[in-house]
Length: 531
Image 1: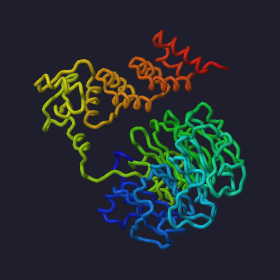
Image 2 (image 1 turned 30 degrees about the vertical axis):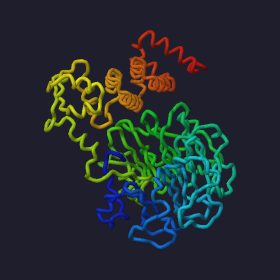
Image 3 (image 1 turned 135 degrees about the vertical axis):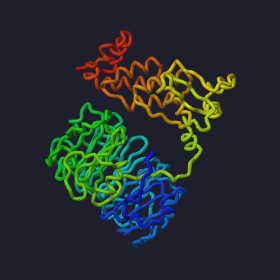
């Protein structure tokens, strides 16, 4: 959640924590059938838990409830990168070292330790995972799936509907690799509904398995699936993030569009009605492109965040059925779940920002373009940008040389636009850029000119994030011009994946002759014209 201070106080379970304790929290998760259990990590990497402790889900070694936070010693210093929970509840985490720990309810072997005894303290899940590095975990009501750095998926626990993907409906006592048609495929994102599992591949394809009576697998039918099935209806659509509600699924495309399918009795698909959908439906967002979708298997609530940071919510909102996406004043999708989901849980691991102490980086950021103690100004397009010579010399070789030769207090710049030059100077103060893809092209030009390799890479990232059918050719041309190989490859693949639409744009019609010839021959080598 970098950038926006997240107020964990919105979740009632945190209401009794004193402000000085709240200020130390860096990660948090709220779960349980009444949103009454919480686990959090402090700035010193200590892990604490509080709440009702059903089935020992707080990992404290007993089943005592606690209104005061108690330390979970086993997890202190572990650096949690992913956390998920079931409805038992059981809790599963992945650490920065790629290890998996699980504890809590184990009636269906969802802890993956081969038994059905509840786990009162976090224990490493080792079967078949010992030489694997797990980076993401997801839990359904009583099953668990995990994704490794190589893009493999392992699953274990409750399997009454095939949600473990083993080809049977027998519960799976220890982690088992989900193979069949996922064999040799690279999975980049996973999610679980109550009784189903979903996976997104590196090529944007989406697979689902398990319970399907509400159409939550998106296969066009209502039959449960005991092994992964590709969602054929999303052919040619690149999915980048998936989220599962109780019995519905939300998927975000590489162009910021939203598809939804499955149960809809609370309007959680955002289609304007309450009819279930067994195939993915494009949800109309007249707003703007989306950057995040959110749902949680404990509720029928849906949320999404737009590129400019607006947050939308729909579905079951505090008992009301909201059938079309509703604009909120929230800063994050997490707030939707704190205030409107029943129970009020967190849909993923929250990562929170620090207090009002300013780090070196924050202090510098604050002084950018502030005349107060500035000793140099740039004049670009008749506008002023206030900076500090010492900082520019420290941060950039070009300025180190230039400013050692001059005592000027103002320097005029003619080669770049105000927007681009200001973004460059701001980058030297902040390490980040915040530009529309089209403007990032100008900055890419500057970064190439000043030999700023990292800035060049950031520009490429910004351009990638903003690619669309309309601007893809323009961005591709820029990538070729500035010899940004990685970006060129990315834009090229996007153009091929969206070939029909891209070839109908104005930019394609006006494309440079040599570039066009090159594009067509490369696209044919890529197999774009096979029929």
